[in-house]
Image (cartoon, rainbow, N blue to C red; front, side):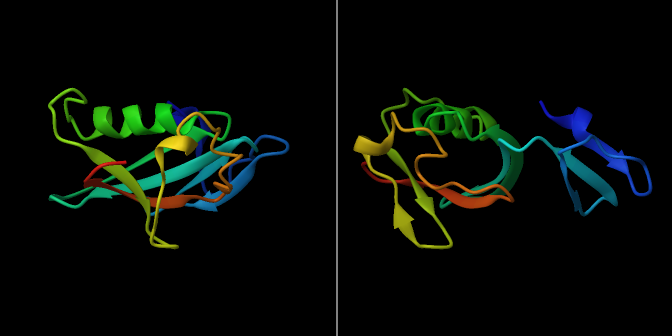
Length: 118
């Protein structure tokens, strides 16, 4: 949980932290190795936003997406992650790589959890 990085406009941010104005009028003060994930599902209109370390693996992100969407990871329904900007799938071979190794960038990434095999 990176909610401690939320400060109101005009407040002093931490040294070395980035500041972005969020929709609720707060600035997000995020350490350098943290990025924002905005994700949706192909079978639901719910959109989630949360913060993740670029040192996390894609497998950890995959599990976190299931948790955030309240999906049982062992329900027998195959799901995969798609990068929406590039419209590319992330493959099984990449799941042990860190997000930094997969060129996830600071400033955020848009993903979709969709039905289908990895």
